[in-house]
Image (cartoon, rainbow, N blue to C red; front, top):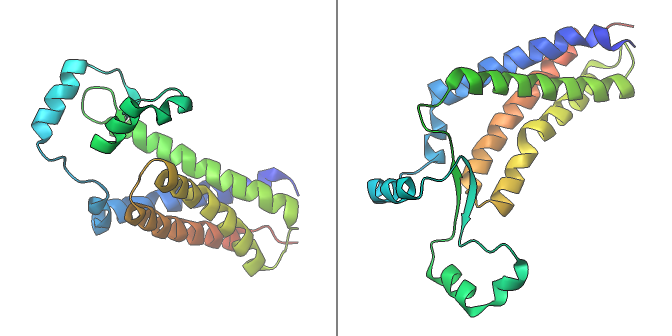
Length: 186
């Protein structure tokens, strides 16, 4: 089966997920619980501004060599706290057009990978539920699994991961449904 016959469901499913994500994040607002304000936020912002860190990822306490983790001074820093991962973004208001464009490109990528796997495992005219199951499973992996890693390694609260998993399940079902409806006939 030529991949060209799958470009339409790739783009349509990406658009459907993009619209659904907009509704989930703007209308339902259950993601408001994902972020909390820092206590004494202005003092923390002032301290960060004095350090003037470049955009990037930071950790405190910083321990560049795992061998140092056993040193009493490093252990004391971890015990005293805070232990934090910090993402510093460029100064200025968030560039929403850029973020939304990148999100849409990610949606296209997830749908493309789902189409790629389906193309190599299914034939034209395949059972509609099988098409939905395969493309939906691949989409679920693309939209959800990295959040588990974020909770394991980056301290993302498991509640955030659960909310993102619910979103990802919805996106996966929508992706699978689009492919089911638009899968090429035999």
